Image 1 (cartoon, rainbow, N blue to C red):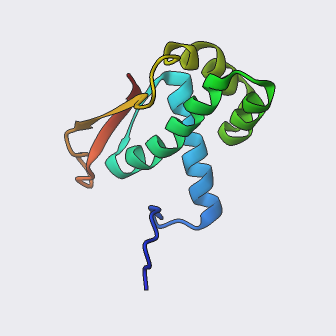
Image 2: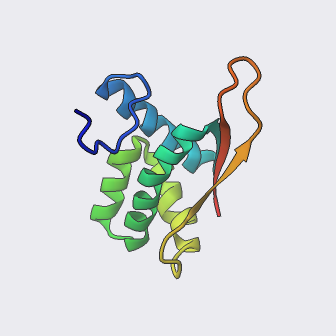
Image 3: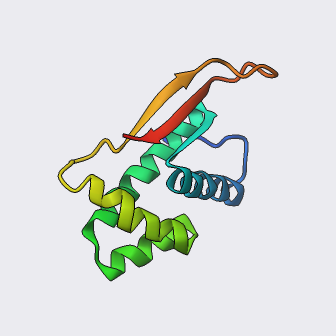
Length: 116
């Protein structure tokens, strides 16, 4: 039975899924917006919102946690120094998802996720 499992598996095993989410988060922080499938955008939004909230604290411990979760020193630095300060007075909702036309070859629902 399913029993309220609230994760999207993407047809991957756990390690592959974690690597995918980490890669999407890293790309989102570096480029400040990426085009991906709608399901992946919705999934990565949950993680990136928590990371921005963590980066807003500005402590060394929070920076190290962000670096561990993003997997890149440069992305963590950009998140802590450039992105998080913009949302200092915002209580959440740091990203937006814009739906795009379906992908041509397999008709997958596409979306653009970007920082507000």
